Image 1 (tube, rainbow, N blue to C red):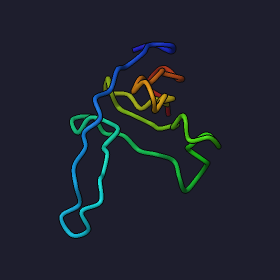
Image 2 (image 1 turned 30 degrees about the vertical axis):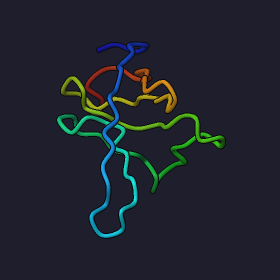
Image 3 (image 1 turned 45 degrees about the vertical axis):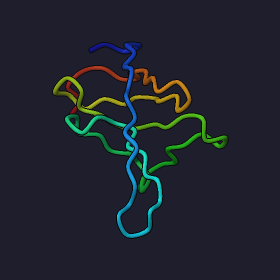
Length: 81
């Protein structure tokens, strides 16, 4: 995939068995994805977007997810280091 490519995500909603709280998975279970909360802020101040790293094509790249539209835009490209 290349910078600027868009990925439409399908959110999955479930409920925590202990608390009944609604839990929404934002990324697909078959793709390894990580948020960067220990190293940098990952949400926009207004909560509208999430920055995350994903391995959609076998390479780690950064994506910016628009929470409302469930669409992520690839920000980086290549194998990395």
